[in-house]
Length: 90
Image (cartoon, rainbow, N blue to C red; front, top):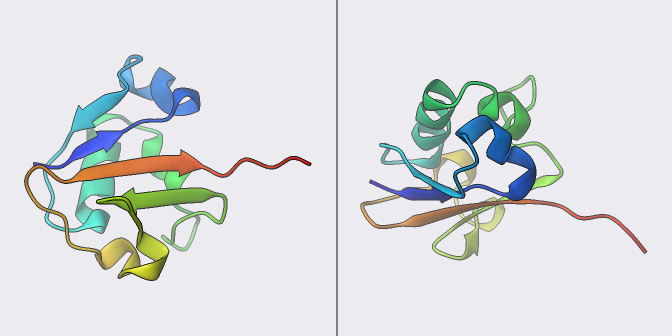
């Protein structure tokens, strides 16, 4: 199963866990299972149309999924999915 790295601002939804393991063979399924195990995470990651929110970056095997297959990006056992909120500033 893939391991999902949870950023600090979202850890209140995972009982302060920095990493969780959920089943899924693509990112869409991983996000659905993540939300089922930790209610509220899905709405923080996906917009009302079911797409990744603009200011949330997700990496699979250190590759930005926006440059792969988005939510259809395949994941496998041992893969690491990293959720990285965009940081604004200047």
